Figure: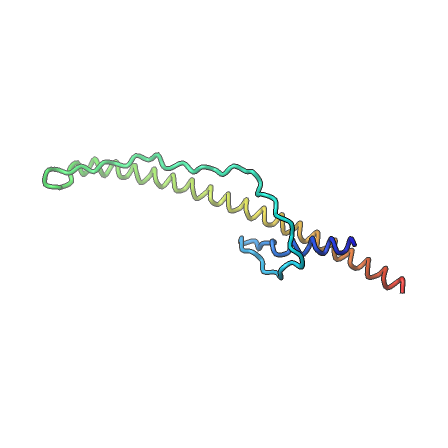
Length: 134
């Protein structure tokens, strides 16, 4: 009876195991439909603030020709520096989120490996007991 429960548990876990690159691992369908999965942990999703960089206003004269070009160039350079800093911060945050996801996947896969090892020991024990009783 314990063997059947553990094997069913393993069958339910196997398809959900993931590779380290965030892609689902391929596995055979479980023998029995698993119970409904629990909801994802209630971790708040970070709200990404839009950039607060000040975009310069482009000024034209009555003929549509750019005016105050040198002043615009200074403001445009400051705007570019601000955007570059904002993008760098967002990229670092993305790397941290990706690393956290990978760590969660590694933790889950280690759990599945531990359960599989325990299941293998249980099967070996049951097989040995069956062989000894014959």
